[in-house]
Length: 264
Image 1 (tube, rainbow, N blue to C red):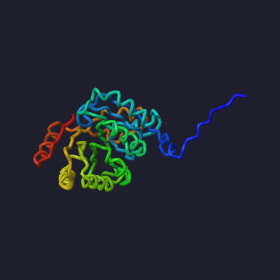
Image 2 (image 1 turned 120 degrees about the vertical axis):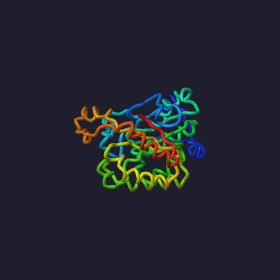
Image 3 (image 1 turned 90 degrees about the vertical axis):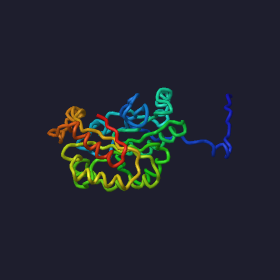
Image 4 (image 1 turned 90 degrees about the horizontal axis):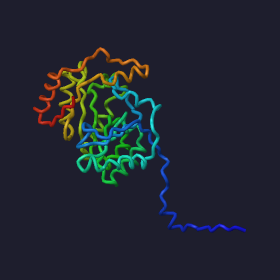
């Protein structure tokens, strides 16, 4: 009779065995050499899903949870790690989307692996999430790159589908905790470039600590994605701002003493 050797695991050994995570992430796509998404050269990971529904979203195809790759945090980390020699110590990985906070458990697992592997992390987010999620991820994020949409709550709701109040409170909280913050601000004609909203922007910036603000002139490059999905693009009558207008806002912010980037 054939016998099988059975090796029993001691109580001590059982305690040292780490359970395999069952959390799987929904990944839309990658950009291997991003130069506009954080410090240095970036490997950009686009997560599927987002808690907002911005009227001018240029990645509308990432929100419907239909076309994505399913990966474990370890699998994603191994892919990013292969590019570490290219982005080096000056660059790193930027987690974008959609919005990564839509997948908080997977995001946390991936961030922990990056931190352990010495990879710089930038989180590109609206910050529409809970305080519990913020507390879980903030010590693993090197830079929070936060999109400022609008400062009037009603207009913010019409543009994004959500209130700006929890977002602004989360920004204040991160600032108080000493997080490194970069802001992104889309110059949207008739909305974010008005005198009232720019005044509110300046007042808010005085409340928080941040490193820089990145101006992004509104564009229509992503409209074709809406049409491809059979969706109506609600801002089709709005034209991109003139460079003169954008430079005027840049100069205004620099006069306040802020570091301003301009991505056109």
